[in-house]
Length: 339
Image 1 (cartoon, rainbow, N blue to C red):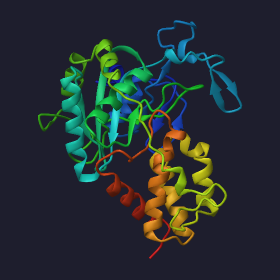
Image 2 (cartoon, one colour; image 1 turned 135 degrees about the vertical axis):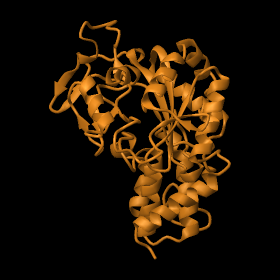
Image 3 (spheres, rainbow, N blue to C red; image 1 turned 180 degrees about the vertical axis):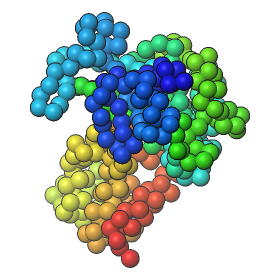
Image 4 (tube, helix red, strand yellow; image 1 turned 180 degrees about the horizontal axis):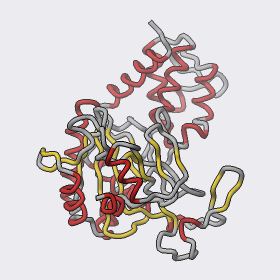
């Protein structure tokens, strides 16, 4: 089974993600998948591969150069970053399964077969497998279009980037690891958990033609952000008309945006959600009141398209925007140990 699983989840062949959240530079082999299935070593796979068909270089994805510990390609053609699968990560607690199933329904209405997996916590993953290598932006836009049209909240889509300067990107933890929590990390079909053998056979038989993904990608609309009216701010003091002044760390975050830590979107607490959380925490630590933190965090969310132009705001425009901002602010309060 390991060779079949490796074929289904084919990705970057020279590194994999560890269960602890790190990257291990080692060739991805059949035996690695055997260890995953047995529970000896739970792994994640990086979906993005540069020049997998060796259109430019006979070395294909191994044609990187080194600069210290950084790997990069001397010249990058974004169209050569490709993948064979994509996934949606949904982390909405007990509601995750409903959102994931809705996403799968919309995908299948577009003739894109999707597989829902209960992740090891309370979230869900939605998997899509392509018949052939597809450009990473096409896969990303196809998945984001579905979530956008269905007004479905999600944490991330994989691949996480359209292109990279060099490998490996961000990995996705694989299902069917040995020692997994009972009833989780298995694909579902009609509410029934599939065995690994059943899942691989069904997924291979229902790979999606690239042209279907291309058609779905055309449905994605870049977010249109409505920034808060300029009259609400003083350029000198950055003060709202109600007198709430933003200062210190929170002021710098609001003005300057995320550091590379957040932009990288690697690991827990990063990306747009992590940036909003850290901003709200900075406001709690500075002694602001709940209503002011809610207001400023919502305004910062509206500005996120400045730094994440393709993704736009995390919550603005969603029906549950206020509820989601409230969750961020409350979580930040707990982290700041404010009683």
